[in-house]
Length: 152
Ligand code: FES
Image (tube, rainbow, N blue to C red):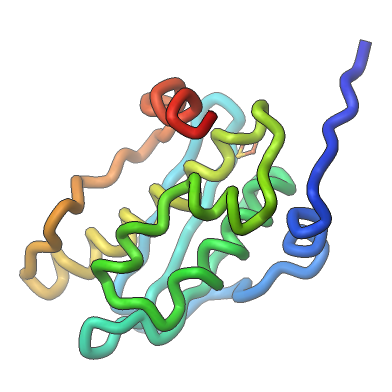
């Protein structure tokens, strides 16, 4: 029996009309993460100037929820400081999208982790430490259960 998954209007909007798709040449930081279980991959590019995220772009090879969360995540972090961007969790992205079905919570993790990976790359390139930023995980599947529980 197939199960019908309902998405919010915002999710559908960001999926059919995603914001900030593309890449940034000579980006300040680039982060790529994937989920080995579903095979989806997300890459986020950041342009950072004087500690402010001037621009963010993404490329997502993944499901509709992953596209919508990447789109919303880039919208949320543009204009923020590095520290503020670090606080944009998968939960915040889901809230901004008016929620995601439970089976799709893991998709929003790609967005959070891709932002962290891009910030990590920026920190490495500039030889700085960002308080509270942990080394990125390449496969978010490892952390999925923990985050899925937290996101409930
Ligand atoms: Fe893999 Fe959504 S199913 S990110």
